[in-house]
Image (tube, rainbow, N blue to C red; front, side, top):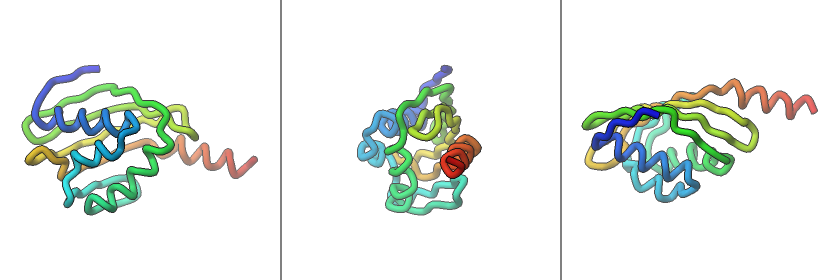
Length: 125
């Protein structure tokens, strides 16, 4: 993993360590009340809506490997691979904007294909 420290990267990594470490409540302390999150299911606005989106994922998470992390004063980019109950490898990336120590904007990109395949396999059996 490549890691360069910066104010936004410090917050992004703390957030990432918290949610991947099964401390979602701590992760939420880094999230602004008015967060805007662009994710594959669509636009998610506000901390409570974000909690409803991200919380269930953290419940099926069994592991995570941070591949790379970069940042500057207000933005950070993380790339990682996650292991979940239904899927052994689910790569993802996050672009985060941080202002006043809180994540105000988050764009999440992840490969849905492994989850779709796992659902199809469960349906077939």
